[in-house]
Length: 430
Image (tube, rainbow, N blue to C red):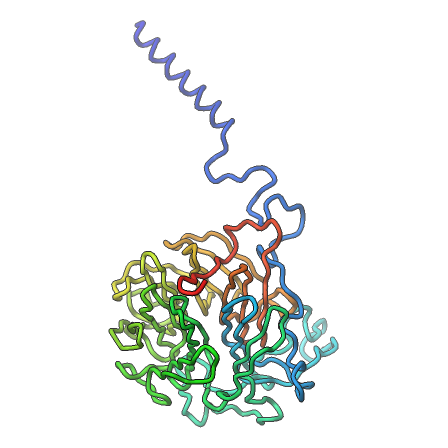
């Protein structure tokens, strides 16, 4: 009887101690009072409209800074790459006429209380409609050589095929104009410098040419073309509208291929074909590993050597080892359309989501960590993100296809560093 009493007393004491500790120590993951999950811990009021960043307004400066460009502005910006805060590459589909936002007017023929433009909603789409950048055939499955897909605008009036690749400094001034290559490009898509390359060659992906172009650091020479220019295919000598590139520390390359292709292509550091994997899936709900529809984003983890692929048409991430062995997949929330991916030095995976205008942070296994962003064309809002880069100071650059601009975001004072898009790996030339 005494033994039973001692046991009951021990149980009661254990419950009492557990209750006491539970009320003294916060639950794992519980935020401290006043900290919350805000990008700037302890901030009072406001909200994370631009996450842990402040937008740098009026950057870059308008194209009117160039002689003869008073009436022209940035076109559909497909790619951006920051070699440094003072050398940022902007890759666009030509120039568009500068347009003033129209005055609001009532349109009762459509709805008695409707007016246009709706507050904060973009009034132009630089990629579609009458005020868009050439060329046509931009959608998945479209054939660039099909006359029916040709751009219908008037060159020189509705757009100009000029200044497709320029370089700007930290103040937003255009410091380099690679106009000697304007006639070479058919549809600019993305631009890079391999972080493991001490020679800092500049790589360009041109999806309508079906190739990768490699230029010297100063842009004076085209030193290599990978793929067969102007010919689509899915073998060791062809791409089918490729989109992005990722590198491992030994400079092994991975190409997402692409808008019309259904594979990932692995090349050695010299651009020699090594292998490819992937098959055509059945969108929008394909779940089989290794089946793709619109391979439109790729990133490589420099430590695990995992390859992350945005299978955009099926609203998911697929993760592989460097030889195409499937590891896992992550579903993206409907109606997501993840255009590009980024992995920096901290190995977090960032997805730039088009439809909902969100910059989304995941850990390497796909756990959601943070997200921010709002749709619009005002400074700090996002419209059709298509490229992203980070410089050595932590500034984030975002290219917007439909928005027709690049935006620069500077880390906010006191921002939680866990929410900042990581600085890049600059192993060879930091």
